[in-house]
Image (cartoon, rainbow, N blue to C red; front, side, top):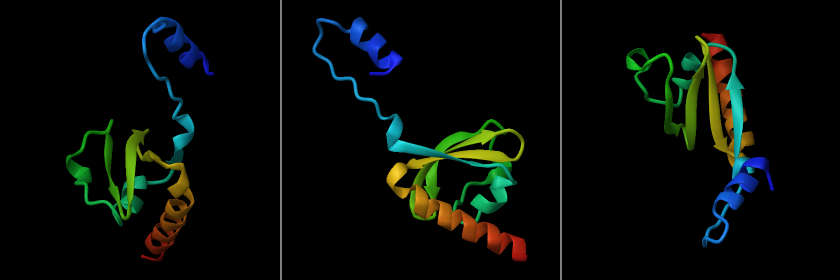
Length: 101
């Protein structure tokens, strides 16, 4: 059990509880380029009206993701681990489409 899990287990000793580590349930993808241009292909967020320290759950094409700004242009995306590879393929296609423009 992780350090946090052990701490929670100790704090709840004697109480009926469940502690489940879900850290492997999501994979984080970091887009280090101008992520908002790429993400605009599949996300209808109004990027101009959002704060620079954005963190939100939204739809990106077919995927439910958590987006969090990481610096001025980069963006971290958390997605279900089982869907990560298909999202990576979609992001690659969107980036290639953007590069042709």
